[in-house]
Image 1 (cartoon, rainbow, N blue to C red):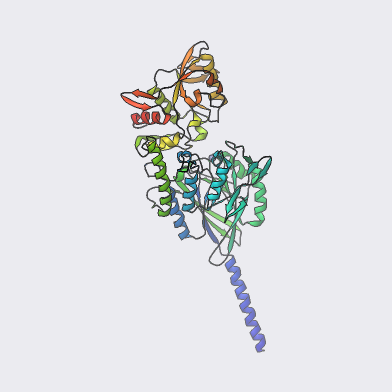
Image 2: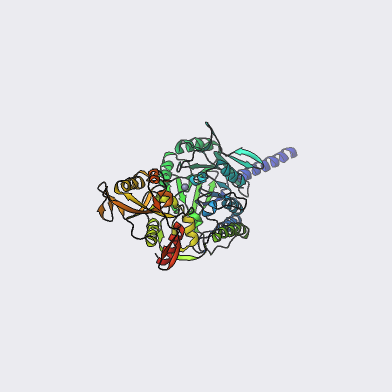
Length: 511
Ligand SMILES: [Zn+2]
């Protein structure tokens, strides 16, 4: 009898603990993803008021205190463009994104996917170095390395070993009761500004294939998408099954819901970040997502370790700029209207930043019939609002360069306008113009129809005048003249696009 009773007690205890285990396993699990995208600046902008990776590092630490199940994800575009990236270090090598990698390492980034700008690095060896120097892990399901006629995954050195960059990872989180959730993460990039050493597999097919694998390996799926928003929406409709697209490329914050997929993008240069708080219910396999946009400004304290890294790079860069005769922190204008300088805009339409720069050309070199500026010389890929400093001009025009004057026959000017405003749409050779326009299929200069036999005075960057711009190589056969300096209202302005823009915008004061 006693033995039976003992057995019952044992069975009851077993049943009870099994029951408790089952209850534990069904407890919801909470986890947080900190999202940022399109970051070219390590330090705050707008006179120190907005952005700054040291502040983002503080936000990550606060989120970790709130919930240890926190990761930070960067949705592409960070190794370039940047004025710092083009500067040379003491050893003669270009910085090429090292300032960004070291600051992101300090800021506690966990995962990144490639944006189109990562492949702006011309030398795949430099890109490989930056990937290896990253403490965060890269994920991409559609960008591969082209080596001769072979297509192979990109690689990352982790713990001294070169490993293929994965198409996806499964990141596991658990709660205090020991219940687990497996989060599938994949990344995808659009084929924009294609680079020869990169093979871009089709976006939708690649992500669909990965989702097929993840469905048996993960409980919640998240894609890091470096795509234009229309593509994101189409992809979410065509490939359902992701709880979230952590988006990049668009530079302004936005949030959409397409079926079961939320799509979010924060503002470029960490002016804002997205915080995604997930709750996963194992019993029902349901996920609840609460996403909030957080402004990064001077109300957030700096993480001192991250700030030390960012400051070191910023100091070095400012020193190089000062050696070139600039005062990077000097305020030159107050932009009350947003100065438009995103790449997709300046390469396809006239923008106010292009117009202001061309007005500057006219201020130092008046009397020409047409003023031209190739959009490829504007590399900011962002908008500017508020305090405009010399540094903002330097990061807008990282290459600088002189402007030249040409006397061109009308027929040739017609060819220039056709290439610069029609053929080159979407490319760096697309022209910002002053005093020229197309109406009814004809070119008009200062309100008069272009005459083939007339000679026109054209002011344009020397880079374009010497035939280096796409579809404008024929210009090298025409003479151009160039002054080392301009004298305007008793001021001497060095003949460089950056100096001209600084001079003109300072005269304006506000815009
Ligand atoms: Zn991009």
